Amino acid sequence: MSALDVLKQIDDFHLMIDRGKSNAEVIALYKRFVISEMQELQDATTAPEQAKEACDVIVVCRPIVRLDNSSQSMIHAHMTDSMIAIVESLTGVWSTALSLVNQSNLSKFILCHEIADARGHFESMGINVRIEPINETYFGAYAVEDQNVNGKVYEHDKLLKGPKYCAIDESIEWWKV
Image (cartoon, rainbow, N blue to C red; front, side, top):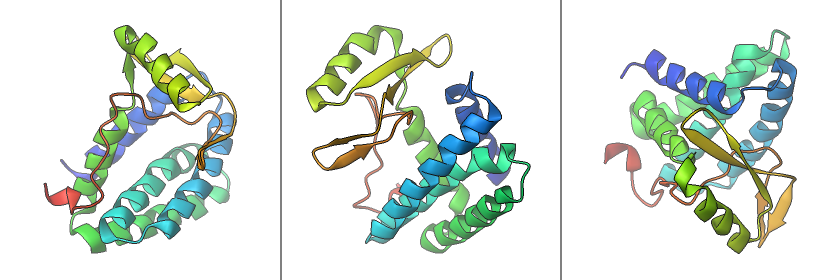
C-alpha cells in the first residue's frame, strides 16, 4: 500500500468519526488530542512504543492539516513530517507502521449487536460514555467528559477503545510481524 493510500485511509477514518461536527470543532478537538499524544510519545521508552505513539501523533494531526486554513496548520504539517521521519528511522517503512496503527484504530468500532456488551465494558471500567452511530454499520464510544479513572485519562469526545479493540503489541517490533 502506498503512503498516499495510508493517509487516505486515515482521512476516511476521520471523516467517519468526525461527521456532524464543523471544521472548527474538529480542529479544536484534535488540537487537544495532539497535546496528549505528544505526551504519550515523550513517555514512550522503547522503539516499538515510540513508533506507535509517533504514528498516533500523525493520526491526530491529519484532520488539522486537512481542514485548517490558518498558519497553524503549517505547525501540524511540520509535526507530521517530523513524526514520519521518526517512524521511518525506527521501522524502516513509515507507511507500513502507520497502516497497522490505522487498522488497530478501526478495531475501536462497535457493531450494533455489541452495544450492550460495550456499555457493560465501559461501566465495569468506571468510564462514563455515550455510544453513537458512526455510519450504518459501526458505532463509537466517546467519553462524555474528561475523566481520570485509575490514573488513566479519558478525554472528552475522544473515540475510545471498544471491547473488541486489537491493540498493537508494543513489546515487539510490531511493524515486522
